[in-house]
Image 1 (tube, rainbow, N blue to C red):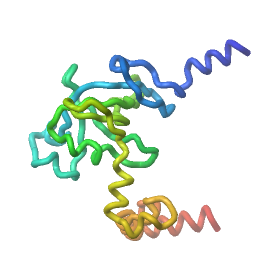
Image 2 (cartoon, helix red, strand yellow):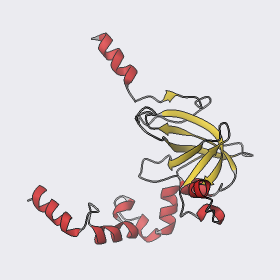
Image 3 (cartoon, rainbow, N blue to C red):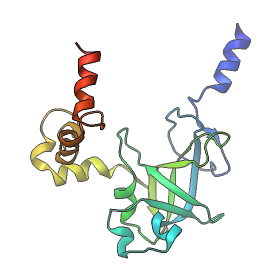
Length: 190
């Protein structure tokens, strides 16, 4: 029994693995598959610009996916998530550093054996000339500033966001159309 417990703990994703960029990382584990702590220096870039040469000013002013061009090896790292336990990206947290060198700390996520690419969850960020890290958790505050009349209402942001509600009204809760929603509700919740 002890051997089975030890084997289960050894394969558990509850603790972040130590990868090539883990030295000095303060990132908190989220227990995700293929998770590795990572702390590295990089330049904040517009991913589409890097891949195609289509480069608007200010990294697309928040309308483009941002990434990190890692200084150590030149890898383009997709910054797909910030440090909040919400379905929010890292764009707002990185946009202020568009084109600048930063140091980031977070989690590389994805199993390199089964996934063609891994993504990065930014938890902490600081400019190259800055002493202290700041948390990558700007999204909720920015949403509240954009929708102050909705921020204080009960419930999660996505149940109140006019953009989300417009999509639900157009495409249904499943995103497959209002007719599909009606059939689903009829079959699953008679």
